[in-house]
Length: 86
Image (cartoon, rainbow, N blue to C red; front, side):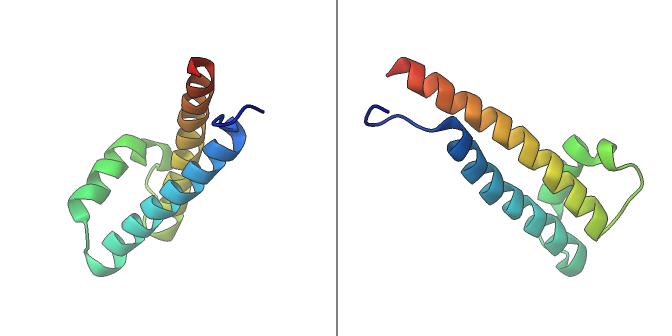
């Protein structure tokens, strides 16, 4: 592998893990402590239709899983494009 190239799978996994944990903690904190309510409403407006009428921990977990998949795909594509441009 050339110097400066990104491994798309590792890059995608690292970003997906970090950001999905952040989304999960944001949603849980909005349920438990009424913190970042507007941000959690924005997240739920994008991913909430996938969780139907669930609330609390289960909804936060499912939204985080969907977010993980999206971020993994997008960041892997970013790494592939980055490698092609080198």
